Length: 495
Image (cartoon, rainbow, N blue to C red; front, side, top):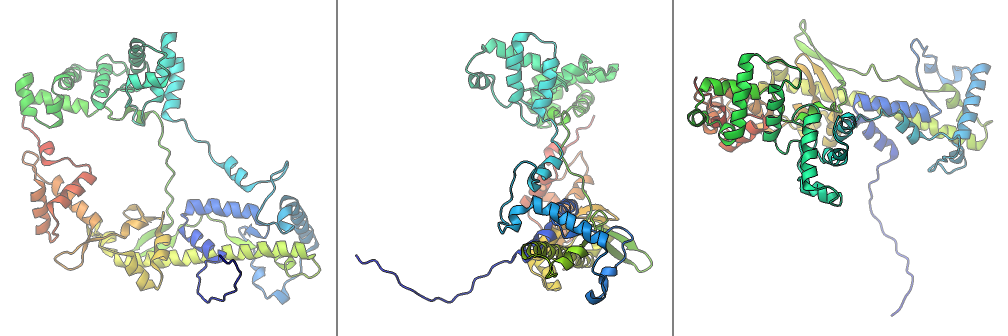
């Protein structure tokens, strides 16, 4: 075997994304709220970037030859700020820009961002454990009760067996003690229905709490009778109740249809997921990126960016001149120049975001005008590739422009991506979006006779009469997505 070294030349093409392009794509994709946080971080770490104050005179627009070098106070303040950054970014100025020290007294951008992040709220288990510690129960039940609480799912139901919980803790508690602990947790914690082993048991616990007026609500005679009948339905006729076989319940339970309907109405007041009421949902507020209003005089919809929460950025003139001043030492000039260039790139990326987003929005308004005029049923089929081709952009750019963005319209706040959807051909050749078809399915069901509800096949027939042809299984899919039960479960039995 022979080992040797050879030299070989090879030509080829390789595509690389420069940092400037990567930053532009990242900024384009950020919604207004996240962009606001990003800009706050950039202002914190970039010495050459600053927010323009209201009323700032645009003297920086003058030719560089006519600009004053700097007032002494401003220059002194600028150099003092630079010295402070030199202490914070010492290693970067020494040529090791990819690292940052985290010694005592050093500022760390990630740690600051984490410190400024709002603390998360209590989850379900933490909240219930806090209440459990204050509950008036036997001391021997506290530990197994806490283990049961920790095993609850997000709905507040116990999807693990008592035996599995007991084994997970080394079998330190007896089966009898675990059963007592479960009973104590169900009786001591609010809301009623917590720690039930299934939905049926949760409803039973809530009915018992209502009849015992545990929640402090006094029941009148009619409501008390309805809950008594509901307890009967849950105990002996659960399967028939789920399948809406009310005549069979009437025959077997010797209850009139009126009483069964009253019991069902009482059950509708209860919670299927009691744990969801204990903790607040961790949702972020929706801030629109674009506002669309109707101009009646010109009969058109006008769009404007809702970027009032974003700061207006500029490059600090002191550091801009310092980057070109040969009197400044090379390391400092290199550091400042890097920050000036980064600031200019960010400002350019923001301008690109504004112009691209507005172009996409205006194209969407033009193509989806029927939705703005008539509502969800008029939403047309629209692919991102169509908009991209019309604007001379790539499909990826259009996708980033609409990602996570919301539009405030006369019909409410709508996610911008909602306007891009597939669909079916219609008799008029315009094409209806899948969202519009879903709305049609809902409208047909809302208008049916509940005593004789429409089958999925009949719903498809009604849509065909409107010029939309879809299969029965598509009706089933959309009906389930809308949370609408089947015809048998929608049937309303006469009283």
